[in-house]
Image 1 (tube, rainbow, N blue to C red):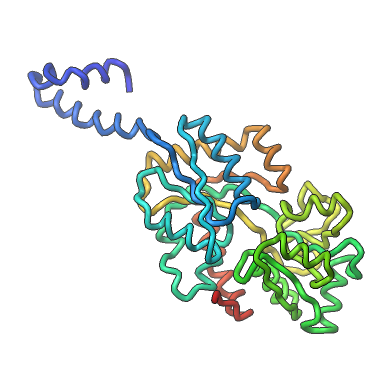
Image 2 (image 1 turned 120 degrees about the horizontal axis):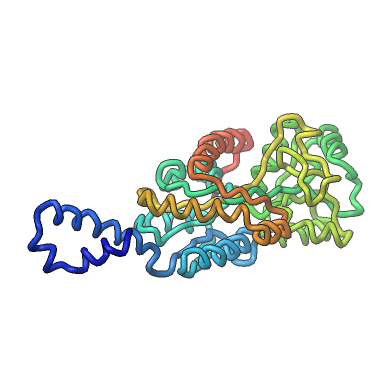
Length: 333
């Protein structure tokens, strides 16, 4: 708004002596000025997982950049538990005032498939803001394991149903569902072994307790570079730049694509001007070379989409994971 308009609004006694049209203008302008003040205080960014993981790293990076753009700090609020549903529910129940957001993973689309009474629908009880990043899930074995390729794993699983074990960060996690989907699409029988986190699953892999781990690039690329692990495949639709020699699993198992993604959402009813501002600031980060480089160190591809892209992804993924969970009999305890 132009400076002269602010002066007119400030001169309340003068405006009261003017005509009705002038009063109408002032009444319209005042709410506009109130909207322009957002954000006027710190913004809470809930991450429904424990500190230290890949999504936590991404959240702190985004919060740092948005603080520079919006002039207010983003307070990271880690609310882990129940596969991410505790943190998500806290945002669903928050006021849609622009001061409560959640950065979550593709578990947002998985939770309705594994919880009989989740208490909310991610497609209707949240405002989609942005699909933030896609991060590959890797299918990993020890460097000295008998499986040299994903073809080896599939062949043995068909010959010896149920013998091959795979570890993940827990029942109902995106990695668990990725393994279940591989078993479904490839028509093989794998035995899932859940752990409290990816680090525990990886430790079990090196101890020889399990054959395979499904984990994100954040958790596995460093170990591959150290020569301790070998990636058999990535679950994205195509190969990723960080390990271009590693095949996408879909090259071996037709139809198998199970990427993990991160997204930002807000309580239902977020005002359109705030949604538009947040979306614009996130999309602008795609052109930030340093931001992209820092994402690259995590093995993540920044997407920073418009809200409709996230809404479409949820509409596609929720029924997919319902089918996978139903076929595998996966339910949260």
